[in-house]
Image 1 (cartoon, helix red, strand yellow):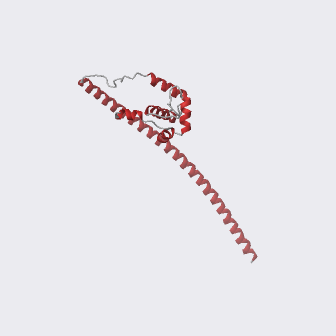
Image 2 (cartoon, rainbow, N blue to C red; image 1 turned 30 degrees about the vertical axis):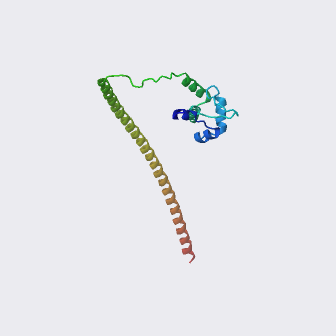
Image 3 (cartoon, rainbow, N blue to C red; image 1 turned 135 degrees about the horizontal axis):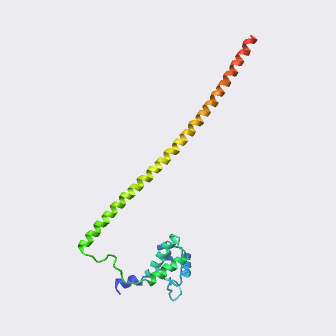
Length: 178
C-alpha cells in the first residue's frame, strides 16, 4: 500500500474527531442528522462511526460556517453548490503576453496609488471632523464648568458675607453689654 493510500485509509473515531476539531461529540452527531444529505459518516461492522479525511474536511467547513453564524439551511445550500461545482480547475490568471502583463501591472499600480491617496484624504477628513467635534464638545464642557464655578463662587461669597455679618452682629452685642 502506498503512502497516499495509507493517508486515505486513515480513520478517526468520534472522540478523536471531537478532540482534533474541538467539537463536542453530541454536536458532531447532531450535524450528521441535520446534514444527512451532505455529511454521510461511514460505520464499521459494529455500527460505530468512523471519519476519514474527507468527512473531516466537510466538518471543518461546517464548523467555519457555523462560527460565522450561518444557519443549516444556508450551509446545506453551500454544500449542495460545492458538490455540484465542476472538479476541473479553472485558470485564475488569464493568458496574456508579457507586454500586456506589464501594462496591466502598471495600471493596477496607478489604481492603487489613486485609491491610496483617496483613502488618505478620506481618513484625514474624517479625523479632522472628529477632532473638530471633540474640540466643540470640550469648549461646551469648559463653558459649562466655568458657569458652574462662577455660580459656586457667587454662592460661596454670599455665604462668607453672611458669616461676616453674623460675626459683626455678635461683636456689637458683646460691646453693648460691657
